[in-house]
Amino acid sequence: MYIKQFFSSTRYAVQGICYVFRNEQNFRIQLVVAVVVAGFAWYFPLSDAERILVLLLIMLIFILELVNSAIERFTDILKPRMHQHVRVVKDIMAGTVLIASVGAMILGLMIFAPHIIELFSK
Image (cartoon, rainbow, N blue to C red; front, top):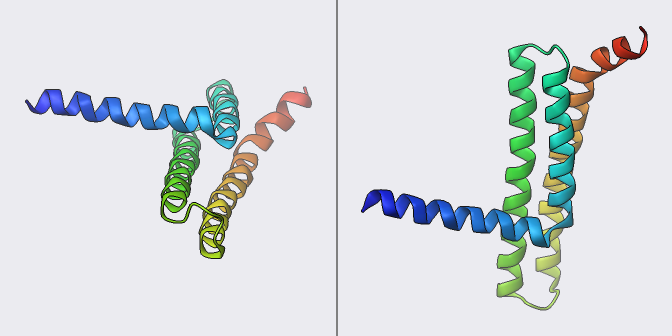
């Protein structure tokens, strides 16, 4: 019984991720960037700690985008018309994802820049 419930829950989770993938352009862009960054993480001789940090940053951005999408859908149900409070909530969530993305980009540049510079200086 528990195994069946686990697989059902997993299927619902995957359906949620697929929904966001189909309906959110930013999620698709973030996925492409994540694949490129993950490729860099395995191509360049990073330390294990750097690779872990890169993976954690990628997961953070995906998680925040999923939460952002869920909150947007929820607020649309509560206030279908663009109410002032709904707009503020959506702007705050978009700002949260933006801050995390900029922070991840800065940390990514700090990790990858020396390796990229070395690659082009040969």
